[in-house]
Image (tube, rainbow, N blue to C red; front, side, top):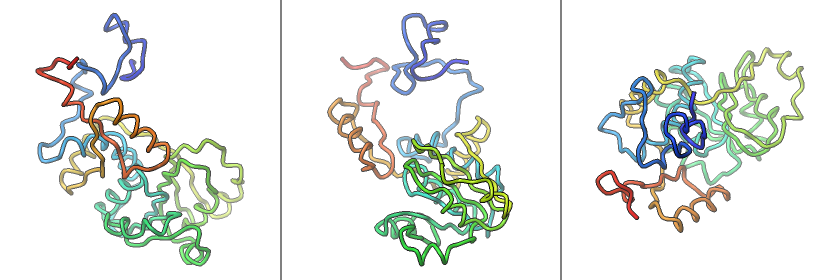
Length: 250
């Protein structure tokens, strides 16, 4: 198995360097591992679906999210905003849990039915034990028990964010008493990714992106903004402008 980015094992197949993924001028891929993107989809806005899109579509499908189910989305960022769109398209009643009241209007526009500001104790109390499934996309340190308390008995939380600190507040009794399920998920397989792309094309779902030129200055600014969580909701680098007839510009 060879990584598509930063893998020195590429030397075995392509002498002379590391694999560079999407930054490559060319790449050879086994046809069994390619995805057909419907022509109706904007390529730039569809590109992050291959990460953010499948990262929510896969656990939704595996859990069986369907019409009428109550799904919570914890965090409205790059992953969370796709979770809202896809869960809503599946017919779920979507509640977004966010720290920022300013995100309410955006969440509702994307398909959420409800928005709960987690810093408001009354809103949290009203939302207690209300969700069949919670998609936890939060990558910053947070109190996971607070979100588990929002699940119905025998509900499931899927963690896809990667906080730097461990969940030190979680005790086994939190799960045992009400039969709660805590799981993790990481992207998805090729078949499910193709299913996701086709689903998004059918429902006119795309990522919210900012398209930036493939120039050092622009990329540096985008990186700094990413560190500050100042992006709505994915940066996409326009590499087409750097290529002429398949050859990279000098």
